[in-house]
Image (cartoon, rainbow, N blue to C red; front, side):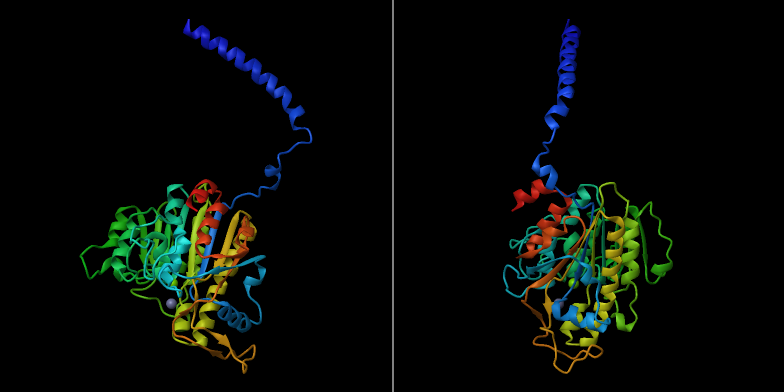
Amino acid sequence: MKNLFVYILLVIFCILSCKTTEQIPVVNTNVVPENTMTKTPSAKNIILLVGDGMGLGQMSAGMFANGNKTALEEFEVIGLHKPYASNKLITDSAAAATSFACGIKTYNGAISVDDNKKPVVTILEEAEKLNYATGLVASSSIVHATPACFIAHNEYRKNYEEIAEDFLDTEIDLFIGGGLKHFNRRDNDERNLIEELEAKGYMMSDYFQADLASLKIDKSKNFGYLTSDEEPLPKAQGRDYLPVASDIAMSFLDGRSDKGFFLMVEGSQIDWGGHANKTDYIISEFLDFEQVIAQALAFAKKDKETLVIVTADHETGGFAIQQESTQDSIVGAFTSNYHTGTMVPVYSYGPQSELFGGIYENTEIYHKMREAFGWNDKAMTDK
Ligand code: MG
Ligand code: ZN
């Protein structure tokens, strides 16, 4: 009896749906809903490139030193963000990277926690939950403020050993940067996080065991590589891994998940050149990062589904190019050995890049990236 009832329902449904199918051409003639026409596709992959302390002066000096050209010229959409912290007008890298990673303003020194020191979920953690592939690459230690803010939560940026422990809390697919000792020769406990990561299924290696460029990477595993014991050397003193690591990261993450990937690469030491008030240091670090920008752009041009965003967390040094400068010989002057409060350029290329034009808070980088990924629903409720 029940089966007969279901059968009759099915027959009615079929008749109705056949009728509807017949009607479709009539309904659709000349009428396409406007929002379908204007909707551009979401970004499948996002590569966020952060030049720490890379203000417009630093970019200009690097451009002149590079024969008056930079890959930044190929970005069609340019915006500016306002880089201040919740407790200070002049931000540090931790508060600023928390804004990028979590979409909130917080206090200087905070690693993806809010003003009440409560952890706030990061875009990398959200991407992981949605089964995207994820990666972090830096020319500082990987537990330093900027990369740390995408994967760790801590009330204070210098708690490097605690920050290193947080790498075990996500399924990050790839990370490359310095700071080996915070993982395997720790001051506060006897844990060996390298062994713990290996037990979790990671392929782990470091500068002491193998050269990154010639390393055979097992793509069936997640991958971590530590480039130095503490902070990596400046480029001018022999550090050469950042462009290699970025290249490896892009090819490793590409196609690893059907969903896409999120990758953050930091040119960490442009900031250190600013703190040291050394023009040459700024320029050599910019030129190193410039290679990464060019590589990411080439990847995005070929891939066509990748959004590339280049920005800085803040300017460092109050750096300005002086009157006696020539294109071949930049003479810089500094107003500070710390960060400054000037607005910071944002360059974007690829699907949804138009979101990044205009002037906005640094927290908008997070919201705009989510929107670019097509995670619109929550982006709206977050605001
Ligand atoms: Mg940094
Ligand atoms: Zn700094």
